[in-house]
Length: 251
Ligand code: PGA
Image (cartoon, rainbow, N blue to C red; front, side):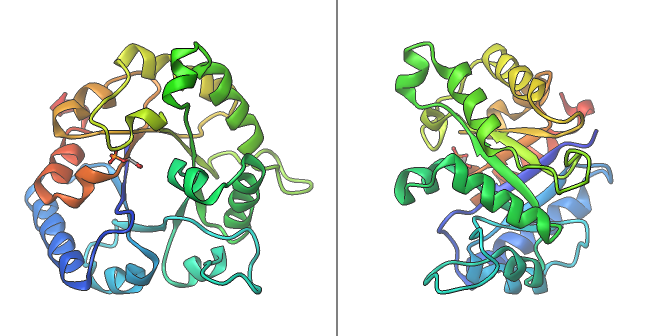
């Protein structure tokens, strides 16, 4: 299966920096071999349409960084899944640990957001991951399993489980933006646990301090279907090197 590399720009970027990044990424991709990861760029909401207009490569897809569970309403500052869809997104990140930490989002809310995304044929990238304390206490597997079960969208009435409809991202909170990562063995074990709880074929990405230097090892780990990349996705060369390492031949 082709790896997925999703770029989470977080609250970074201006029109100018986005243009520079997109132009450079596309130039690198044109020079590289044709087979490559499935790339999903997740810019801040106000830049989505502009980035879409900049993209010449129809294979690069767009994602939102969050969506509300309701399609519309009096929710100042929020963006709904249908709005992201209309803006050109195919994906939306939900349940990122920064949303959980700074906006108090619960698993139930994350699940409702994922269901809202699926209802308009957006692919939710559902983030789960343990804190530093939870790992230190030997709770990582249990915490993540509980999150996966609580965030997994219910199948639509009368429909089979949403096979292929969701993507999960295992993002240990302590690894995000810190330069720390679990060992490949720890990542592999966690991805196995997560996949055991999901419909067959659901991709599970790893996120947390993915960079050019560790990408090959992470992509080569069994059960890792791609990466959710934060900081390194803002650096053209670093991001392109991560994408390059997603090809088995480059490992
Ligand atoms: P990072 O962030 O790559 O900067 O650690 C990943 C994420 O938050 O999705």
